[in-house]
Length: 136
Image (cartoon, rainbow, N blue to C red; front, side, top):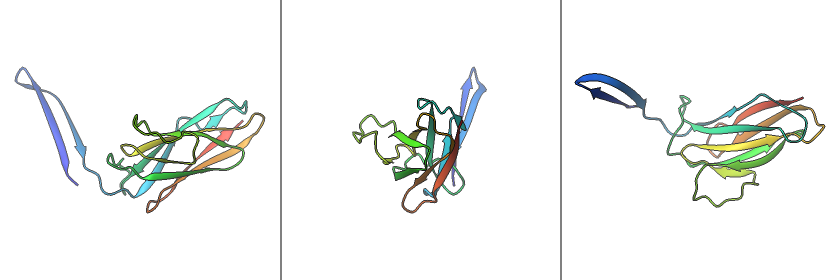
């Protein structure tokens, strides 16, 4: 891996700096939910970011892997997206292509349902990822 470091000078003195490391090939999917618990009112949502990462867990910014989603009962997959303004795929699908190494899945539980919802994401050649969301 290579490091790229930028140093910004202001008035002849170092003012700021930053560094990034290049990534390896896509190897795994990492799921991060904005919450671990949702209400069982049928309206509460969990937003899950899916990251296409290399073996060290770094997001691969050039990755555009097709990600397949599955969710167990009581949860339902409401929508998927990737932030690409030129992508015309339907949001109500069980698969979506990553954009800049990421995509999003939105999960909810039907009204009155309780239990643990597990969202799983898979993509050919990558280790799958999953996240648990409790409905109370």
